[in-house]
Length: 193
Image 1 (cartoon, helix red, strand yellow):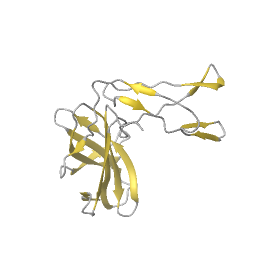
Image 2 (cartoon, rainbow, N blue to C red):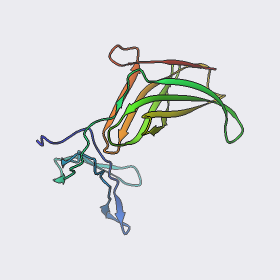
Image 3 (tube, rainbow, N blue to C red):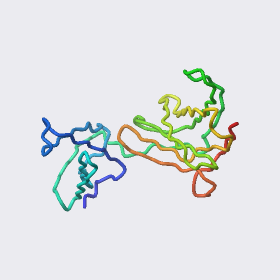
């Protein structure tokens, strides 16, 4: 057991055949200088062929030691500022000339090193989860902005942000759920016509 292992950071490594040799696979990733310092583990290797057949292995099938020496490690997850979620509806014309509504969602997030990406999942009372929307993060104002295009063919209904996910440059991730539960952030409803 590695006591300095931090489970909040991970990378996906994709492997490809080398020189068309399907028995020799290679992949590479760049690990952020802010990622966790210490021992890293792989919890499994999954191989798939062109027919979808899978070979799954776990740490009982192979040995791997990887030690990362990152003196700049960042273990602090991005933080949502409670109560900062705001909605605004703006009429817009799409590139194809069709009318739509831009449901602009903003919130504030605090990040100490740098944000990699921000994502919301929007839901509808009648359809549950309907879309995942990546947004932009302004480092100076600490405001996340999401532009959710609601086309005319979407049903008139009550929409809401179901969840919010932040991921910083060190791969620290934090998820926030919005609901009527007192243990979560309060869900805010937006009626869209």
